[in-house]
Length: 84
Image (cartoon, rainbow, N blue to C red; front, side, top):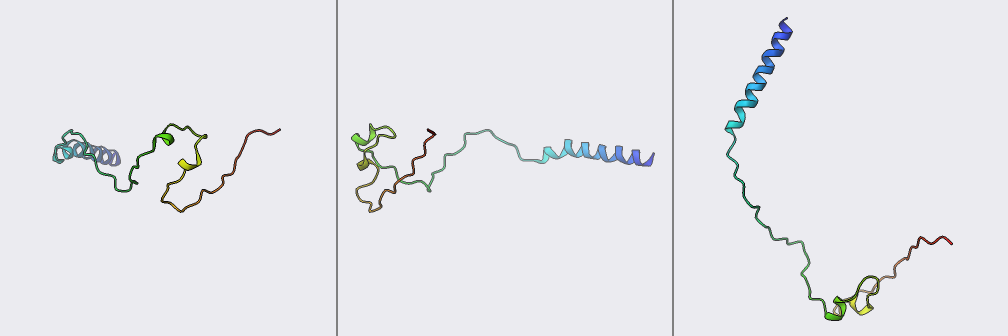
């Protein structure tokens, strides 16, 4: 009997706390989120007209690299699903 009375008392205090405590929270206002600037992005460079009209995988080699870059294009491994 005492255990049941203790459980009901604890449940009543928990219900009262869940009812009263949200009234102490600050009011919430709906607003549009502020757009933040993304500093981890690379600058957007203009694409030349001949390169902009090309589709993958038929892209000219001159469009794959920048003129001021000394990096070389690594050969890729072609994987096919043809098992004949």
